[in-house]
Length: 73
Image 1: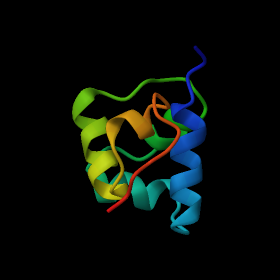
Image 2: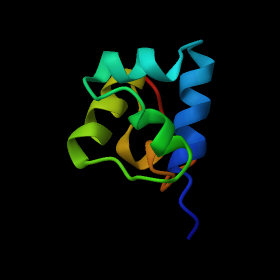
Image 3: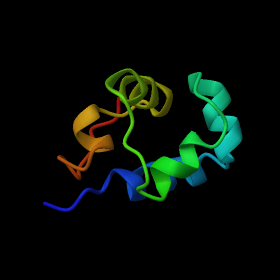
């Protein structure tokens, strides 16, 4: 199964009109890490995945590409 996390993250971020540095600040990670994630050069930690899911109000399954149909409430 292909890792869709990078594409999903970039899509969520751009839909919110947010830059990579802004997202990094909002979830408490260092500048540049979002670029590494989006370019598939690093994978996020579990704590970063949880912070991203909370920030974008999506499930971990959606964020990681396991479930392509997000039920947002």
